[in-house]
Length: 145
Image (tube, rainbow, N blue to C red; front, side):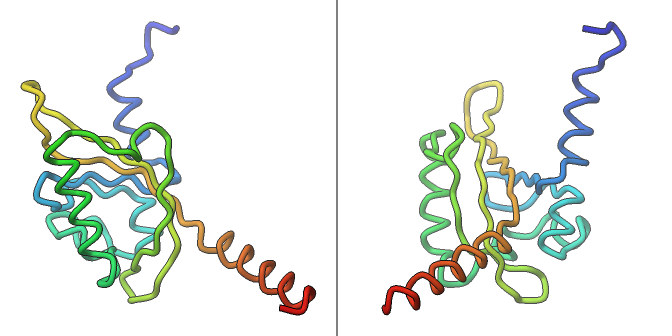
């Protein structure tokens, strides 16, 4: 490895400039980090999102389930979506439109091991989701159902 490689700088640039949304929410669910891809995907600028609740991107009908899982992760420090398992859910854009996203999460602990928040890497899969739904409809029509 080159001696001029700065792992801390690499980590900061990767989180800030990744093509997927990178978000961090503190233990209360307030957004503390929102990268450029999150701006592109969800339509909120960082200045509009940071400090706000994750509710800005969670559809109303999914909030109770989201906050239940979030609280459990904060309590236990564990999530089933942290080891590469993808969660696929609808999300909200700033204009109120719904998109389909897939994401993984990473619990963050302080030096004492207490949960301080959750990081997430999210990808907009709306186009793929709609293509699959259209193919299923075509198959159902072809099969007479």
